[in-house]
Amino acid sequence: MSADAPILIYCRWEAAGGIERVSLRLRDFLRRNGVAAELVSREGHPVFGAEVRRLVETDLAGRTLIFSRMRDLLHIGWRGLGARLVYWRHVPLIGSLTKRVVDAAFIVSMSWRAPVLCVCDELAEHLARLPLLRRAALAVAYAPVAPDVPATMPIRRTDQPKHLLYVGRPGAQKRLDKVLAVVAEARDAGHPVRLRVHGYPPPQDEPDGVTFAPLGSDPQASFSEADALIVWSEYEGFPTIMVEAARAGLPIIANAFATGLRDFERRIGPTARIEDRPEALMGAFTRLPRGSYDLSGVRDEALWSVWAKVLGVSMRDICSKSDISSRESAGLRTSDV
Image (tube, rainbow, N blue to C red; front, side):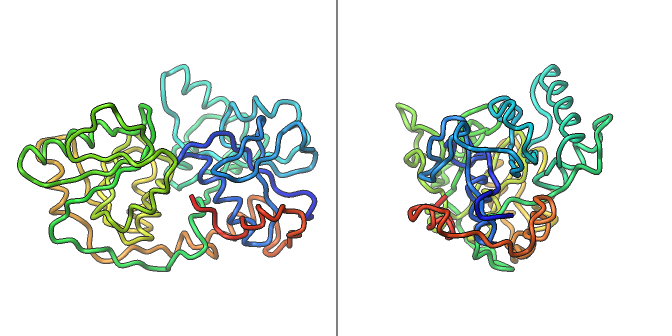
């Protein structure tokens, strides 16, 4: 990979905790390993302060172009015909029957055109059941998190957990409503539980014991103050926020969401399961995990061989720092998201 032909990552929206966040981290990860990489979008708007190329100003011929959504490819249009596409799939088939059928047809068609890179084993197993899918196109690679991930991290022990952290975004996928309900129930029963929420605009009347962090703020800054992370979701891909919490040694409470939880518990460590029933939160508090998290599988050295194979780059293809603006050369460090 030459310095003047960086790998391109299509990245549109600034949505904390979303695909754009992990896309920026992928860019940083590639650069840390000596591979030129840049973000690109139709609009060219910055993502978390990072520079993004405008699509119309970028020659895609012969480039490796990573994209994550069907509508990304619609934006790319005919320009993508000469690119080496990599479809980075983050979530299972969801939504109405029509949406799932259209999505499945797109995934199958892409499997005959490009690698389909899944964010966890469970997702790959889910997609492998699709009729007519070219299974040889499926690959699995966890999303990079940071350059300094320890091999193991002791799980913090808290005798009387009170401070919960929740990270999500508005929409049907994330179930903040469930979290607010169990917090309210616990407080009504006399337990002084407090919840800090990242990714949501504050309502006009904040619920008792709940604070909303400023939009766009880094949830990792709240890890040190929390006694546990709570994840309540309909589905995930691979829950990056849980990996970040594990890196900080934070105990995790999670519902049985679809896709990704099994991979996390098998590869990294246990969670305290929570169900939609009375006194669910206080019951989860009694089951907070102990021991340590195994993060060896999400360290750069473990991830690199898989990403290098999928992207077709050598272990140390060197990129020229002169091809990156002085402001963006800081991207050779980890972005603050």
